[in-house]
Length: 309
Length: 143
Image (spheres, rainbow over the protein chains, first blue to last red):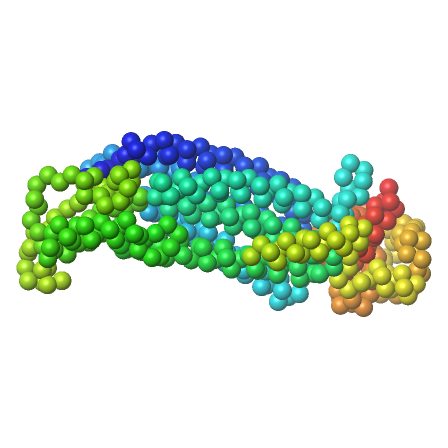
């Protein structure tokens, strides 16, 4: 049984850590800037809360990785692979809450017909409409998450890291919210009081959908469901192929697969252990991803119920 | 998803920056067209705070818009409620700082202050072109 991080993915793990550290640094600068430009605008306050919320996946990714590197102990005999699953659940909740918050906020503003005031401010002795400063702050807030999110996706796929993948979705939510904010403020500038809320409302659906999908996958993983694809509730192709391979090798046995963090664990029920097994040789997918197959266990036939099930 | 947002942005850009911000209910345009704006003047105590500055603000607004002020004195709450409903364009008078009305109407920075009381002007939320003019003139009068 593999219990720590395999050497094959160490380089990608280091890359992911670098990307997450950059994310935290950029997000803190964005949070500060939006905080300075938000004025009394509720929309900007919501954008600010979301920016704070979007730090969650990056932080829990680093925290989970810290644990994942630890060897099993007497108190945690299976090691810490599942901390990644737990971090995924936390990130999924953050993403779903962000979408729900945005949707609620925009519907509420529309319902009470909130006419947003954006006053002029005194900037170095000149009157400047605060809307232009908000747009500048939002434009700044759009660029880093766009680039970081784009860079994270391939790494998340190689590492099969759902926390990093959710974080990439969070970055997408960030830059989309930023663009919606810019459109909304321009709309308000043109005299359409509802523009900000409508723009945010449109975006919130897509964020909420990503968040709820991630939540469904995280729950499936913690409830020992079969491994799911990244960003989808459908069962993963590699896992399907592995199940088919094991069923072919052990005819009549029941093969069960589950996911523990980024790793797959398989159990063959109704067959006594054949002794030493080469997990890499059994892996049906690309050899560079065979590290995912972390554990194969055998449950010998016990009673009628077990073999019949 | 992105396309509707981009089209709003393009629409805004093509509308030209000169007309931004604009009023959703067209207050500034109406004031200019009708040559009149409706002012609620909050009734003060025996020693009103800097009445000359309140007068100066109205004079400057009249010059900027080419409209005259139609003044209606009264107690603060009914005037502010009518401002919120759009029956008045402006309320001038003494406000607490911070004012509990600050989320319902838009209040300028103080034109004059005396402890927790400030002379200021309030406009209806969201009328951003009118508010921009009001803020600019209030700031000039305060200086």
